[in-house]
Amino acid sequence: MKGLILSGGKGTRMRPLTHTSAKQLIPVANKPVLQYGIEAIVAAGIPDIAIIVSPETGDEIRQFIGDGSRFRANVTYVEQEAPRGLAHAVLTAENFLRGASFVMYLGDNLLQHGITPLVEEYRSLNCNSEILLTRVPNPSQFGVAELSSDGRVVRLTEKPKEPKSDLALVGVYMFDEHIFDAAKAIKPSKRGELEITDAIQWLLDNGFSVHPHIVKGWWKDTGKMEDMLEANRTVLDTFERSVRGVISGQSAIEGKVVVEEGAQIVDSVVRGPAIIGREANIQHAYVGPYTSIGNRCSLEYCEIENSIVLENSTIAHVDGRIEASLIGKNVKIVRTHRKPAAYRFMLGDNSEVGIT
Image 1 (spheres, rainbow, N blue to C red):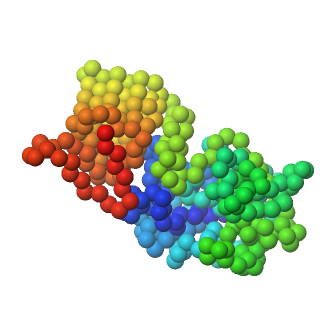
Image 2 (cartoon, one colour):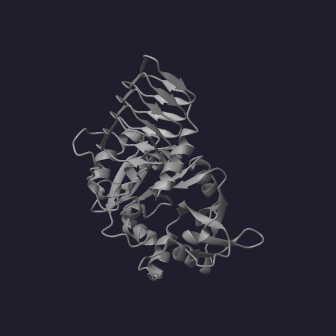
Image 3 (cartoon, rainbow, N blue to C red):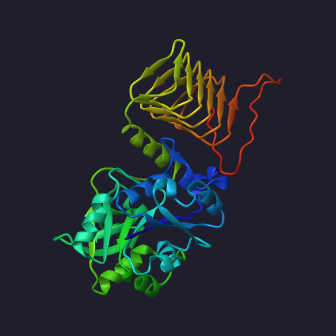
């Protein structure tokens, strides 16, 4: 088998961060989301992986992943000029995938237990496709599957206004090469995309076998800030305490906290689950539960919880607690003493600031 990771979306729901960075490289628990997908595919015994990239963010992804060797993978890059649907992405990578069955993994998704058991099940079933499903409270926002009373897939619909089930398609699929015929046979949807749901429906209509697997354990789509923070909380909950940095002064490290090498915690409280990245400097601060502090960040005289702070950012002398926030790279949030006293901002498009 081979792997296909889709990482070409524009990430409009995560702006302004995605104006300057690929959404798949935004970290959850200090690890880029895309890395979780690569590691899951490699763990399933699939080292040959193609990554679909866009012209806008392809260079950044190539720079981070490289040839994939540090993840024990062999990575090939395939550029998709525009996001024209998941089935179009499959066709874009046809030359790489032809002659093998493959797993397709959306690059902004996280699965609790990885995909190894699912790949093994697909291989044993000898079916043409396996789709992953999970029950969601808002199925109209997803591709939705209808199952018959004996558990067979009957119909798939992309973002239905009136869903006939609560079973949403999880962003992991397994196919053999019949999916290429399906993708070539369908027409673009009303939103101008070749929908993977339509391609799988074509397989069903033409007598091919599509096996449903209802996922046990959590699945996270990190397409929005709220989703990213929820994924961060979920992953941090799986951590074990590991303190490799320097703790000094009247500091307290409480619960499941990871303090990475080179980090310094001085006269501060860190309450887990939380992670403090390499060479971060935390002084006279409080870092509360479900917070990820990136490498080389500096926090001083401030409080923060349930948040993600990306590398090389500084937060200092801030009154009040920061919470439920996603703070990008190289950001400075500091108190100034300039007169007259006033708020002073430099914010990009689609920014959001809450003031108390």
